[in-house]
Length: 212
Picture (cartoon, rainbow, N blue to C red):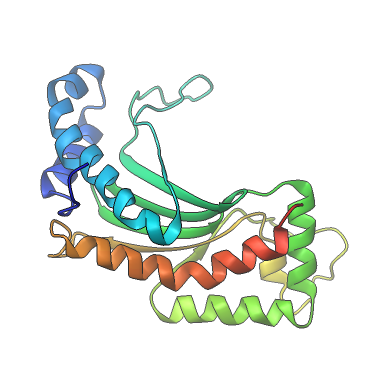
């Protein structure tokens, strides 16, 4: 494994071109660009971050089109995830738009969702989560995740944390685009710092949904 030296801008150009021609013919003709400018840097990045966060799963570039209307064969980005617990962890992605980092709880079992909402409802744990989210938002993160259109069963619509209670998943993310340091070793330091900023939220989510 070679050391991480950054994400070459050729990788962003590759995905921009792929968006215009998402075909096997294009992929095969430019596969070496993907390997050298996307796949290999991603492998080197997660290897460098592994001592602090754990082993990563690098997602395959092919889309699962079995039940999709869009039959485009390839994803328009490359992502990797480090799981801290079932359904929770850190995420990094590179694509035409540049770098994105994210983290949180991407899905939940029924028992986990029940536990999450009980924690949000709690007068100690609920404000803890609000504080963690406020801190992330103040430093440029956006809060996402699948949400109910209305209130969850068993909770009042005027609950002080009703918006959080609607969440079926809960994530934080930040788009960095293509800063000057993206194609340098500094990118690993920036991604590590961003993941560390999200660690309190990820650990809170993992703790309240553990073994559910």
